[in-house]
Image 1 (spheres, one colour):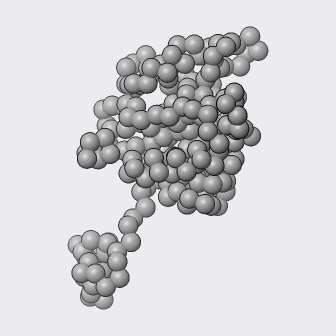
Image 2 (cartoon, rainbow, N blue to C red; image 1 turned 180 degrees about the vertical axis):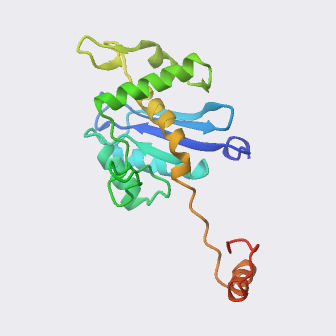
Length: 219
């Protein structure tokens, strides 16, 4: 009920990971967006210093809570590789984002999960998010995230990030989440297995034997 069961909505969430090994480390962040035909809005977020293994566990349960939301974690050297590995091999999260093969355009599910952000790719993420904010087609609720967005800028080294003395992990997570909403159709929710011996299982078995259509689970 409530946020977890919105009619005609899908959930996506992006995550930016740090090593989280001490209280002075950079925080990790994630942003959950509810996506429908006419609106996109933040429904949950997290921003704190946390070890990568614990962050992976939290992302797993948060994603399951939000209807197995499509999850993309930035694959970086600061902990993203660890989080993606835990989500794939330990928690077996059912809807991880995988990159596309550059030649075939197909999803490489046998590759390493995660969102790889290059310098050019980051510029595109920034411009896409900025356009949605300017057009009022995306709504953020977290004041910490909004504050980071206000201080996000092009730095003297020509890279983008938070102004000196500020953080930008929340912004990175928001950009990834916004990017994922374009890829929902490529990652359909897993179909629940029909218990063997149940009424529906028997109905589908008989339908398959007789070549009938119209029975759930029997295309």
